[in-house]
Image (cartoon, rainbow, N blue to C red; front, side, top):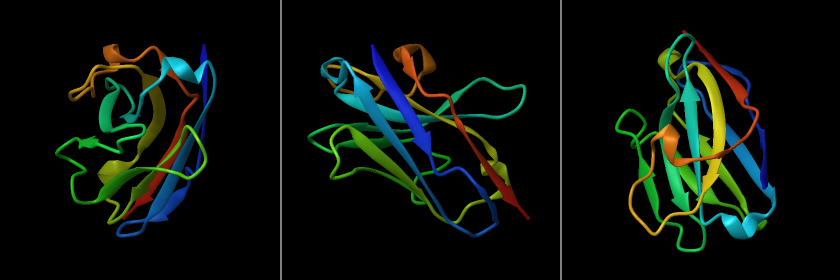
Length: 125
């Protein structure tokens, strides 16, 4: 199994920035891609950004394109989501996910079976 540990959630004002990190451990050979999802109260979890480890290829949801950047850190199997120009509607619980894919865009919850515990992001107006 792959274990995921998220960090970086906080409360910020609109227009501010936050950086979320996710570190994978355990059976990381089962992982070639990591992603961030978010969940609003009473809503389904939605994909935000995905990265293929090694190549660094990324995919983004339209709602965050141009504001969020997902990158791989120097530490192995660690990724960071840089969130700029935050809006109150970005307020949600953010979850890290890991999976293995042959390629393509994978931002559906059902694509992943390894999840972190989540970290709260709150953006006030």
